[in-house]
Image (cartoon, rainbow, N blue to C red; front, side, top):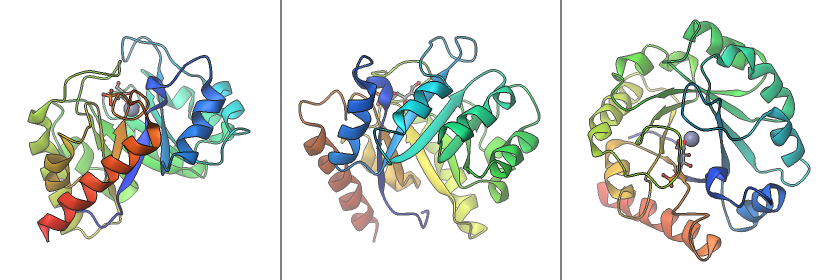
Length: 228
Ligand code: DX5
Ligand code: ZN
């Protein structure tokens, strides 16, 4: 298991896109720890979402921790603008173009926390090769692009491998899950070693955001307690 505390990160992709500022503020007021901001370029993943100016403008609405997940074919071309816009954490994919080590180093150099992400099916070693360089690993539990997809349980093995490597090397690395996270899937994710939970449909899609976040947190906390 990772040493990191449980964190709940609603995904802005499931919020009302015409009211992003208010939605970011609502996340913090509803008890969220982080705000997960998915950035697509239509190439790496088949959707478009937010740009660096969106992140910069959101900063005047909330001081919540901005967890920026870049699903871009060429992340190196954009990280500086996202860092300057106020991203706290920038996560990039190992499958993207460019040298991963150099991209992660550039994120660090820009003063942000550093995350590395894997698509479903990408071997754990592609992330564990970078563990000493990052603060967070994100093995995706759906193919990126859209909220509301079905959780892929086959990723649990990859998560377990990553968590074991983090524990063996005694590193302060968070493990995040993104895609199909809900009260149903959290217990297995906790068991595999996840401590940061991104929730789109299960958070912004719920009738009461505050209640949903509290329930997700309670489910994760209970599951962790059961592990002893
Ligand atoms: C998927 C995104 C997720 C998405 C999660 O490409 O990276 O952050 O918003 O949505 P749910 O929780 O509905 O699967
Ligand atoms: Zn994401």
